[in-house]
Length: 451
Image 1 (spheres, rainbow, N blue to C red):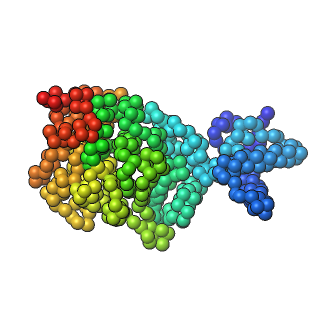
Image 2 (cartoon, rainbow, N blue to C red):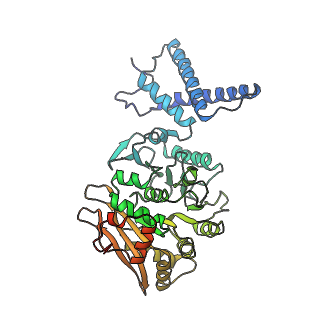
Image 3 (cartoon, helix red, strand yellow):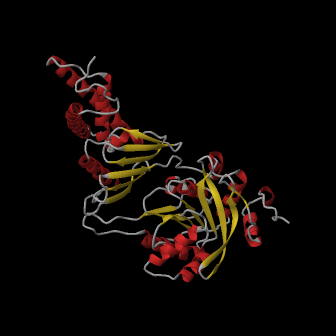
């Protein structure tokens, strides 16, 4: 049976012009009926529907409206919709009504790690195996894509956020925890990237199961957290730094008060009230549409220190917050955690110094290194093994500062396959701290330990 508006060779996931017009008509009818239905419930003294009930109501009304359109088309001598066309229209209407538009079907696919839109009709996704695949358009035009981004921002933040030539970038967290970054004007076409977190709740045992580290290294890293060592997790983009930070946080006792500071909410430690019942989660804020009210991470770190935290966790060091963060680590908030983009474990020190040099304090390299050496106890670096698996590749213990250098021992270093293997032993006093935190030194292979 031939469908209305379906061109030859149509792909099930794509919607044509005539179908889009029909989808707009159906959507408007469903929206009007939803409003009337909500008014009837209110008049009857019933509470508003929750999200699950609302979705069920939308599906019911959508089915009824499609039936109405089908009967009208047939009565006028037209052809009924084929199943594919009906599926495309249904998908388009549901996507529009549930807030994420053409992105809805991609966000519903839990196997995807990254969603990259290089213009409304150039859509690429990366799966869990690191492979890229082309997907159908997510909007009819780049202008519609811009409106979708603005709608998402308003629905997530509850306030209007600029996304135009005057403010050509937008950074926000979607309701499912995914992180969206969009740009326009500075690129040839409107583009957005969505980073997914496939393991929102994780643990050290889960890192071992996923192959990020072996059981011995997992026990060592867990002991570092329990022993309240300040740790910076380094690595490249999309290597799993946030996932590892969550796993480290799972070793923090529930009796401790945590303050988390992020550019965009991703950690979600405050969501698990059993593991972390006493958490204040803070997020940097973009300026509003008038350009007012922006608050950066550096300011939030200063605020966080006034909130009696046992530990301060900064989702990612990316600028001037490096100085208040190091001050927090060196002034009694031991056990603090953070991440940073760096290509090597030694490169973490270079990145920290470069951020400090750009901060308002304008610290010299020597002063920065002294601050870092007094604040950071360990650097854990993530990379990729020979098979493309995310792994811990290097662990450094910070020893001291010597002028233009931070002195450190590489306790674990990358082996031939890129995975961390034991190298130098930790200092004797550090080993004592780790053993007091429950580490079995005989279970971790370091030849000179226990001698």
